[in-house]
Length: 146
Image (cartoon, rainbow, N blue to C red; front, side):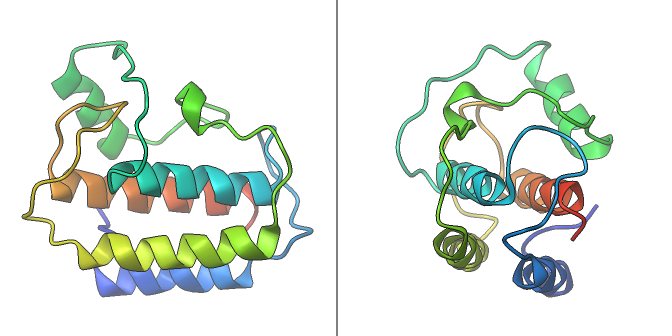
């Protein structure tokens, strides 16, 4: 399972982000490419403890939900935390630059350190966050053919 902290994984995702164009068409879902980038930025920011979000009630016991989230494929158009939804169009270039910056900031935080509680998954480890965010970024890059 790839980790965002792994340099090879990080560079692969960064290259795919760099190649992303403002006119990229979605393969599924409702978000535009700029909205997707802002969505990733909200999620990465939440993982780093930026802002506060309403905790969600997990649809199943926490350990099982966390296991499924990192070990099984995500369905296309799966629901997300309401606070992570983006309704308005965004500045593609600014969101892309911010996403690349947040990935760097995220990977500078040691996996062994304490991480903020997730509004979706509750208390999690740095390793879980690193797996989850690598999977999340990959999922949405695939959504736009990158």
